[in-house]
Image (tube, rainbow, N blue to C red):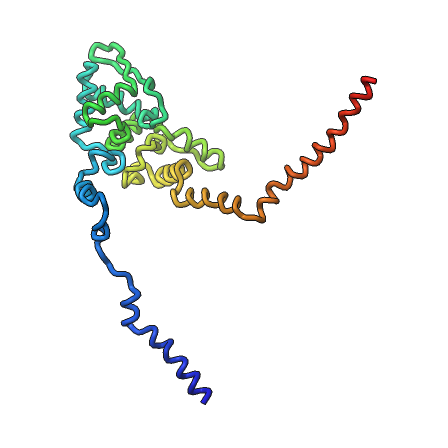
Length: 271
């Protein structure tokens, strides 16, 4: 009898795996928009979804400038400074190799190029931003740099120039006892070269790996940063760690109080 009871008790557990019960528990795939039926801004949301985001979030949705924008950008510099387009490209490349595409660099950063008469022409980062505004309706120079990444890399390699991250990456290698960057690798070691999908074809596999490592070190994985922020909050809220962290200062306070009776000693001198 006891065996039958045990077997009878076991039968309901097998019935729980019935496919019909799994269908009831499985999530139902629905359109999330249907869940906004009672939203006070449903009509606004519907119209916002149909808006082209390239008008508002250029740096995220349009990572690179279009060929037409690049041509207008170079032509704008050429016309503004009365220089040939190839000279304008040289000035743009030199500025981007110096770091003009980075937001942290000042607008006064500049280089000297020469016009047809051989006279020097000073071209600054601010001048590039003005040309970018005319060609692209924005001042996001990094979009231009990413679009010209291959051309600038070839120009730098032929002229034995360094990318904006060449010195930094090379110093990191030397500090670790590794072999320094070659002239070819230095030419492609730019922050905007990361968007080149086949970068290893131009400079080998080491520069793409170094650029990715440098990017993760400076910006990091968002999920990792989120976990690092949450860890101190959890530790600070733990009741056991509070006395350990604050234990040292609390032991110092009684010592400070014990030092106060030393004040009457000064009174004795006054007698």
